[in-house]
Length: 65
Image (cartoon, rainbow, N blue to C red; front, side, top):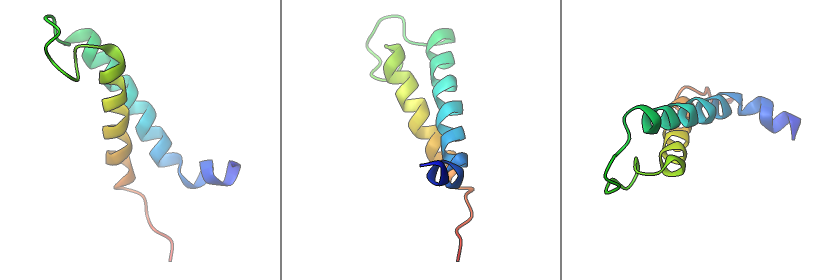
């Protein structure tokens, strides 16, 4: 388990940063009338941010040969 975490630390950092960003987006901007699918609830926005952050940060991972 420890080895997996060390090998994927960039992905995990991206998930955490994205989740924080998604939550802050919901808190500061959000959707006041509830018709927005992603930003109307905090858990949707946080999960979407975590996925996007993980995808973004995983782009920069170097593959071992």
